[in-house]
Image (cartoon, rainbow, N blue to C red):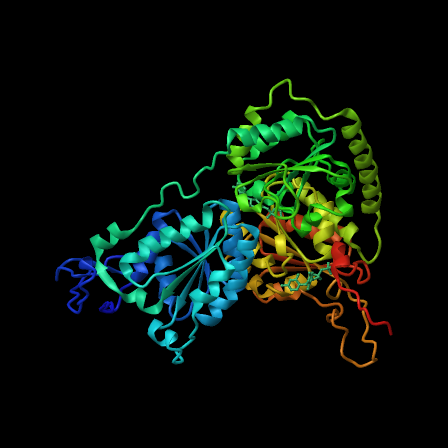
Length: 598
Ligand code: ADP
Ligand code: TZD
């Protein structure tokens, strides 16, 4: 089989390259045998055209061999190309763009190390069911496969495969359309996830007849087909719900992703059933909704008899559906697009398989005026506990200790988010994560973006950049000082694109806090401790952003209000008591205990 020929040096003038293509000797691909005068196109332009044809207009990436020209040409062709300082952050940006828009977010990297840097984000996207495509350039196949030591040699396709939903490689320019179409379908259909698309360097300069190239592209029709649940499955679920004495609805980020907001709200309100939002489902209904049981979480999980999961998995975040958290026996209804998710941890009495939009509307159709409201002793008991806990919380929030603790600082954030319910909230850290989740109410769907299923640090600045790019809304990133460090260099990116991002670093001098000491007396700091009193605000000033050092709630409030109002890139170094946090936040029990006694 003949190898594809290199095109004459591609021009940056558009997607048609004029000129003869006399070297073409490929016989398998008739379209490649071009008329001497016919306009030609090439791999670079076919990739761009294929993405654009499918409504993908943003690329998050980092240039270098062999994709530098792809980034340039994509920008020249009107795509928004957002260049990062590290591929992992570009990958996280692409992943969350996918969550926000339901279109696969695209991350573009160079070969081997760039690819590997993007791979964590791809795996995280897959774990979280975010649609994303990692496109990486790769080195010469012939050399890679014989392991002869090419520049950035790596069998990227094989490495990506176990970490994503699907992985494809395109070797011929005329297959780019199919490759991109398959990547898009794989990312968004069924359970969304990450897809890897391997584009070897040689592909980009292959030339082919422009008209044949255009025809080779595929505009994907119905990329995420609706999946209608079976009527008997819907009936089974409704019957179970009707018979419940202490029903509970649990909304997960799958429900947020599905963009079936009005129907989900109607389902909750028409049934009158109390609900709990998982972290990224907060705001699907406003957290202040009277049916929210968030402030009585432990009580409802332990006491409910029938629990309907909507786009949420019974993984570690829900104690696998068993044990002390879940108290007495219960029956589960699970609404999910993935049939194999069912029974993964405990028996599911009523699986409802389909896309959440179709499932929720089918459930709604079966709920009429005769649908029994949950017993008043159940909703009353929840209301009592909720009110008690909210009163206690209000007292804690009103305190004004010096230095600030998480509560006094988050009391400010809570007000700012309430006054700006459209703002996007990014959140990572341990205590900085857990306290923000429980203290800061969300009012609208898909506003809260956080560490997700893995509890991964490093999503912060990538998510913040994509949230700003995809929505043009103000972004507030609440960051532990450790969490911020994983992606901190992207404040340059935020300044470069002049994004309306306000980063607030809860600076407590280390991982979880800053109080540990080295027991040996050696001058090395303890493993969890950072430079004390660091001034993160100075970092953003290096790039022309606004840096603020805030030691009191009043200073924090003033700086956040100004940042949201001005839309200027801002970084606030909020000084938090270094003893205020606990080890690992709420999940300290997951730390293994040493068996050996001193
Ligand atoms: P959370 O962390 O909020 O509990 P998970 O990530 O564990 O949420 O669960 C999300 C679930 O939602 C996954 O099981 C996934 O299959 C499902 N899901 C994602 N998108 C859809 C959709 N459009 N329709 C139905 N289920 C979906
Ligand atoms: N590395 C990665 C990629 N993800 C992780 N979750 C961790 C390490 C371990 N880890 C956590 O789970 S939270 C955290 C780390 C390092 C940082 C906690 O410190 P922080 O937040 O300063 O961000 P608080 O508010 O001080 O707890």
